[in-house]
Image (cartoon, rainbow, N blue to C red; front, side, top):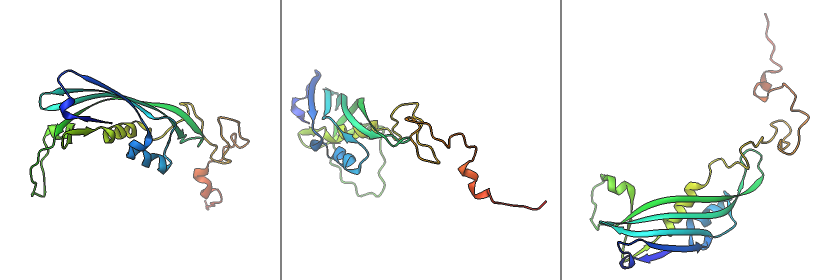
Length: 179
């Protein structure tokens, strides 16, 4: 998803698109790594406007994804959504010969662009990746797997669940000491 900088005016402009995974290389890499599977294109809605010396982009995105539960290891589908604001500013062509560069606050909260066109694909992919859960759960009350027999506790009870034996101290079970 690209826009020419000259087409951006003071009045907000609405851009809508369904971005296939192939147009967002960062997300292709995430899917190939097996972290998640994208079941739908990423639906993107951007409001773009020129403000002072930068360009403000407010965005909404959504996609349907399949994840692997970190407790029970089962696959589940969920909707991913993000609301964000990004500021773009033209890159200053200053030669930096110094080893250390001091960043101003403006450098930390904005993205730079070059030329007369802005490509939103890297930022869209970044927003999707930031919305992916670190520990995905199929549901909040997922009971996971039995640590002894490996049965999915969401589907059935296991026979070893009543056992008071703890794996944490299994190495000490045969330990004998003299009084």
